[in-house]
Image (cartoon, rainbow, N blue to C red; front, side, top):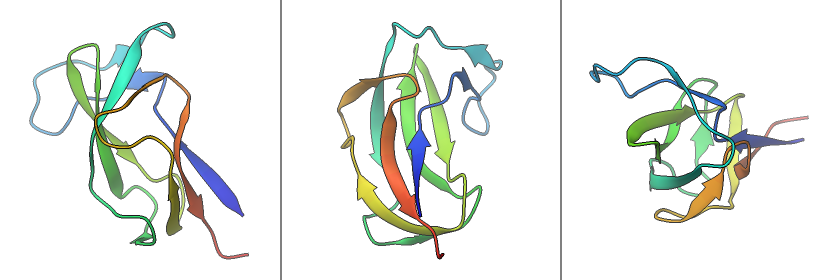
Length: 93
């Protein structure tokens, strides 16, 4: 089964940041900054898969499930909207 990885509606800042949790505007474009994994890498639930910038806050995007990063839809440096799938994780059936 393929499970999408989304940019979240509510952003938690990266560890060590003093910023508070914030709601991100649906109209705001978010940029994927860096992928920590490559396509085909194994991933566990809650592992950080990438970092994104949302309204001048860097947020970490974690995996929703255990599996393998099957596809990266939004490459580093590209922008997309909130709740847009940025990648897919293939889970064992």
